[in-house]
Length: 181
Ligand SMILES: [Ca+2]
Ligand SMILES: [Ca+2]
Ligand SMILES: [Ca+2]
Image 1 (cartoon, rainbow, N blue to C red):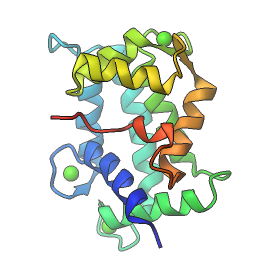
Image 2 (image 1 turned 90 degrees about the vertical axis):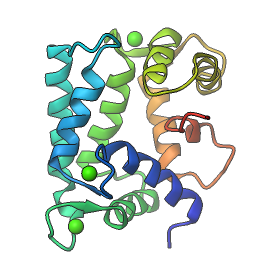
Image 3 (image 1 turned 90 degrees about the horizontal axis):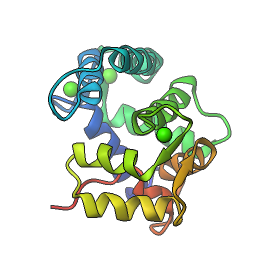
């Protein structure tokens, strides 16, 4: 049984992917998501990044096909939660699409593409997702434990913590938190 605590975290991510909020994730949600994350604050789409993000997102979508256990062509919240609960039971063996999700989440933040996330990259991205600048900076300070950058190895650990930890104080919980009003 998945705990309410973890379930809530999985549903937060589900909500990000369900771009049209119709309660199911489908291919078109992933296409919309690629545009959203490749869009600059001025509304222009970075074509190189768009292609890179779309590739990653469609790889996630393809991998998710086996999550569609009732074969109705979309992934429901319950089907989604079941996938992550299975991962939490065996974190050493993520599915391929879950690894792509981890890498994609990193790529979206490492906009300068130098292999680590710095405060500036992090804050800009979180601001574009509706976080206040100060809140985003605070979250980065906690996640990086006061360091100026977050490496890929550190990010992977936080990502795993987000999906597996039952500890309300685990740092990884902050990775995909929602903006405070
Ligand atoms: Ca949807
Ligand atoms: Ca389904
Ligand atoms: Ca970087």
